[in-house]
Image (cartoon, rainbow, N blue to C red; front, side, top):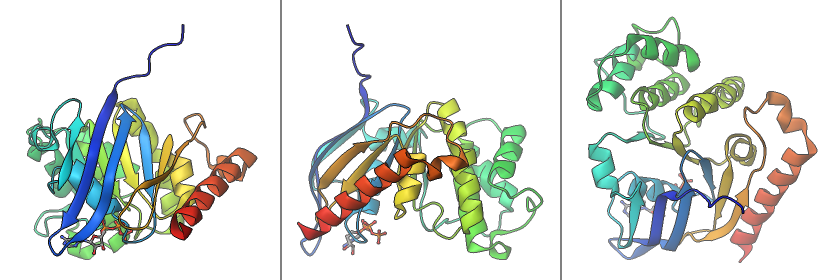
Length: 257
Ligand SMILES: Nc1ncnc2c1ncn2[C@@H]1O[C@H](COP(=O)(O)OP(=O)(O)OP(=O)(O)O)[C@@H](O)[C@H]1O
């Protein structure tokens, strides 16, 4: 008999959001994500991807429906420091060094200091040598990488990444796409990633949800059956190209509908 599928780790039921002024951003959405998987959200600009992430992070309240993470509310999970976020705006503390900002990820989660982990994360995001530098003296891409490292410092159960590589140069982006997933897979982290890049979505994710223009609904739910760890030459394979074409076609369908 086939094994039962794992219970969903993130469950959104009838989730909708209407901002004051009547801006309807999410049509009622039903989403069930398995533990330990990486899911990419792709969709046209302004469709509601960041809003969905903010609701799951417990930073906004839904207008209707509910969200459960491991059976608990986002608010509860956030208070347990089980959710980490790296959003487009890195929001680092200007008076703390790069190292101090990354270490803060553990402090805020009330976890003991772990200098070896902080060093590993700094190396992983390619910022070794910049430990003592304050955020104002770092480039936008470096600040984004620092925010990713800070999000990973608390070993969260759920990692929410909103365009985490938006300001990062192409070569570094590719390196991060190779280096980061093994870390969150090793820890069994569930990762939800917003990206505008179809190839990044296919490269990083186990599953891709394609959203329509606002109010967002799910146009396609595409499994990415490519094994991990993924190597850089994967992007040259026919399987990769077919998946990217499927995602692009779904995006176009959503816009045309
Ligand atoms: N606090 C708010 N009040 C009113 N409208 C809002 C608020 N936050 C977001 N919106 C609107 O909700 C819509 C969706 O915004 P959101 O940032 O979630 O989209 P997105 O898909 O992440 O966009 P992008 O890809 O460009 O980052 C936009 O029309 C935006 O103007």
